[in-house]
Image (cartoon, rainbow, N blue to C red):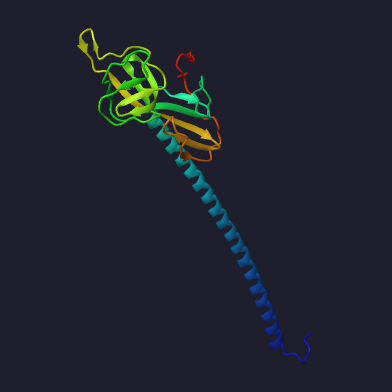
Length: 231
């Protein structure tokens, strides 16, 4: 029973005030919970988006590296060979940390003078100056040698020429083709894919990072001269 000193309208107002306060508290609590859940979903969505973006970026990078290797190997003028981390050629079909191949540098040249067996020098016709560390090929004589010195159009090889190279043979003047090449090497070291553009330098270009496979390269057969191809 309501005491006479307290009017009924005042009690009703108190009850209404208490009810309104409770409703406000419930509404605020609900809003906080809903807002917290929405914020959590938003944060998780951002995290997933960033993660997927990173994965997609890595996939794009991997595709770019594969496309680059594919194009360069297709344009090579030698069969690729596997190499160790120190860039020395391996007598294996893999897996290995690196791969190397020859790539033509500049236009086709011609031998400009006779070269005797046992000689280290070859004179070429006019053209772009060769560089130390490049490799000279004379396909008609199966000659291949690293260039260790250059003087004008005369190159000095690391190994002696095994046979006479003659511009005139049996009274016929011949055009003997010579090709200047670069030994391109890709090696994985410390999770990095490194490109060495020349055999005589230790300077490399960083192609990709974050590689988890230290020996990613394999070949269907062995490209080392004298090696027996795998079945």
